[in-house]
Image (cartoon, rainbow, N blue to C red; front, side, top):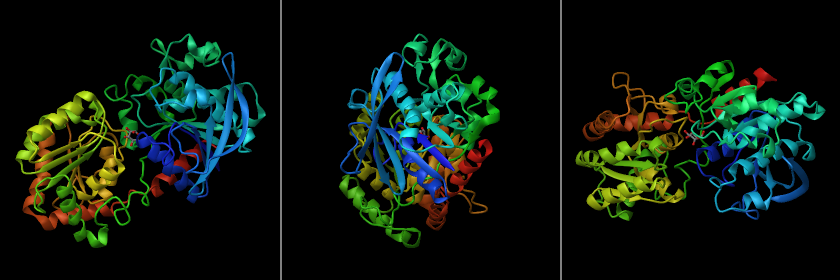
Length: 474
Ligand code: GLC
């Protein structure tokens, strides 16, 4: 089976968020099970061509609306997976990965090029798996080539994977023909409210619609979570699937992570504490193994529940815990967190930046990992935290519901503390329940940590489900 992933980011080449982690690891997991999975990315100027041995293959021209556009094709191999890169400096030699005023044109070109390069790289996919709105048009262009009767694309199928339905790619309808080069026969599929909505178009035209956890797939039918698309997804529910993300166990491994002070694993769990002691010292917090540390690694946005954290922070510290938060995002939240740190310098650190090194240290040092997201398609941080023996406290939405089993003291199963409705008091209650076990019953706490670390968060099971979904349509 041959699958072409089309996505705007993939670790290690370029990563903005969780999408990058997924596209950087799922294809390899599929490959292990015999799928010839390859990936197409834009060749952003931020990608280090030398470091990853990215080499030129050839160039073609891609037409978009009235333009004929240069499209360089580059390639590289990483961990046994072929990555192809679409080069055009005018579009991708930019300061930002996303958020440029002409994102519509940039990603339309990318999506079209991804489909058109296939005959030139001698790869005839059985299906393309497009990811998020940036790649959504590749589903639409594939549909167009099939309609136009191109033999090469005749039997090719498509899947659109939704990593976050909040971002849909909305544009003015007059761009349908002039910019995207699509005829009016596509207006029905792409038009939504008063926009051209690229994600909606792909949802209508793809053979399967997939999202990154089972529970989020259900939530997408609910107007509260679907940012307007619930009626569309409800109509298309027959082709909607939810497959939970895994993480790369080699990349996120406390037994070999060079960023942490002391390596440890399930078999040497007593070593983990050294990380907290070293990190407390580095952060100039009180150094003590008995003080519980609550950690967060997050984008500072409303979706991630930072408003609850800002309101609850002092209460958490008054319960005796230290609070360490790493992230960037909404300037309003950045300021709030800085203010809190100034006020409670005894117990809190707000590290307003992006840093792989510090995130590893937080995962390895914290006792509790707080993730009170308002909505969460899957979430990867809670999985990484669990791998590093930090016990998650989460709001039971989206993938957090599928991946964090609440601790059950009667059966001693589960590995997290959860709350069910999005408000500060319920969140505080969950934090308090966790802190009570930590403070009063260390043997049970160790048991919970072991449950978390032993939980299977590899791609293995999910890769099987992707293959089943692909087989359904082939
Ligand atoms: C997005 C979602 C996150 C998910 C990730 C990868 O970043 O917000 O929940 O884990 O994509 O699928």
